[in-house]
Amino acid sequence: MEHSYKGEEKFLVNDLKTIVSKARSKAFAAVNYSLVERNWRIGKRIVEEEQNGEARAEYGKHIIEVASAALTEEFGKGFSETNIRTFRKFFLIFRNLEIQQTVSAESNLPKQQTLSDNLSSHFQKGQTPPAQFKLRLLPWSHYERLIRIEDKRARDWYAKEAFEQGWSYRTLSRNINTLYYERLLMSKDKAPVEKEMKEKTNEFQQDKLEYIKSPVVMEFLGLPSDSSLKESKLESAIIDNLEKFLMEMGKGYALVARQQHIRTEENDYYIDLVFYNYLIKSFILVDLKVNRITYQDVGQMDMYLQMYDKMKKGPDDNPTIGIILCTETDSDVARYSTLAKNDQMFAAKYKLYLPDKEDLRREIERQKELYLMAHPEENDKE
Image (cartoon, rainbow, N blue to C red):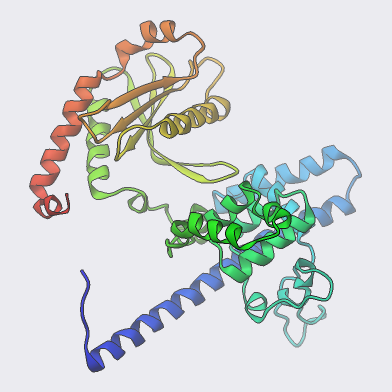
């Protein structure tokens, strides 16, 4: 609800908003600096150990395995072998980002080095980084994306622009994927290219909580991932009901996870419900959509299935099954998906253990009615 403030109230409210915004910015900067510093230092230490140790690829692999196991045991998630290799690559590519060291008077260590001292590596010869570039770092997710760019000049340009323009992760990723840098280089008139980019990424710049909602930040701070950030109240109510509905079918369903986090090279995803059916020996992934099911939704589920078949499925397990549901019950309410080569065999073998589409339609519609009865104010929004 929008409030209209007058006179002194307006000045007061504006001041309070400024205080909160500045505090959030400082908290963001502190957490981000610590996260980037940690990952840079881990990468640096791994590289140093490799250089001091045996000159064999097996030794480098062994170091990463040891580091991953030890850190995971002590601190939990966030230190997989893949992540440790990413930290190592981050240091090798951005080794000139000298992390500040706080040194006591008695210390024999060299005096502090600041991150901003060597940021000139991001810029062409003779260019000076702007003041705001010196004062802050990119979020860690941006560095994860940047280190996958092979062309150093392109990588440095994207880093510079992300700093100066305050690009969100989604904006940076979109610009890299659409070859924004290369298109600008080839364009005599750059204004239309820049205008199109800003229009296409405008919605990506709106989410001020993007960084705070990052599961990487949650892991770094030792906080549980809050599924409420990913679900609306109605979605949550429907998912609660579906979880009970499938468990009570008596057809071998065991709950594995809710809002399970999956990270790809491009983005973070959350699968609403993950079950294992011990009668058909298959993982079953359930994803709820608030609108009609699209081809993009089917493609995303296929990606989930590929990842599950690769990372989770055991040698004796059958292919992973996906169920895409939508809250628009006047349309195709459910799609079953599998990467099994023989769809007819899949239908004959597994359909007996999967919920019927009409049963799912009734359950979703019933839950929507119950929810709207309990929250009559939501009817006004339709």
